[in-house]
Image (cartoon, rainbow, N blue to C red; front, side, top):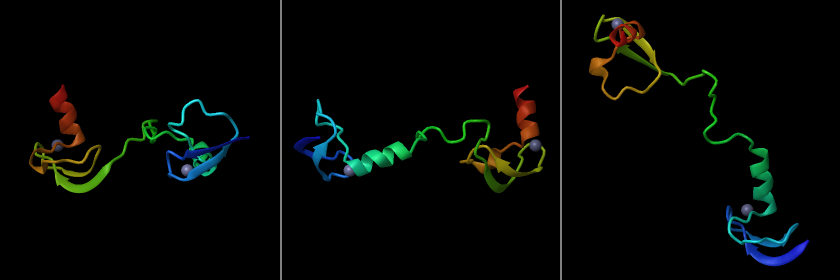
Length: 93
Ligand SMILES: [Zn+2]
Ligand SMILES: [Zn+2]
């Protein structure tokens, strides 16, 4: 163990002991934060990238065919020109 007087970059707590000699005092983590980060294996950008796209439920109307739209893969800003999946596909060719 190496004794010192460092500060945890995550929680700001004092670190007095480290299992290694830190080369840089930037980005040091106390034991608590370190174990927390280890336990959190999922990366921030890794939310269900396997085709499980997020859908937004709502009660919209297709501007093309007038059909009901109950879910969209995005949150519509302008609901006056929404298209259902069918019309959307058609408009794309
Ligand atoms: Zn910490
Ligand atoms: Zn439609």
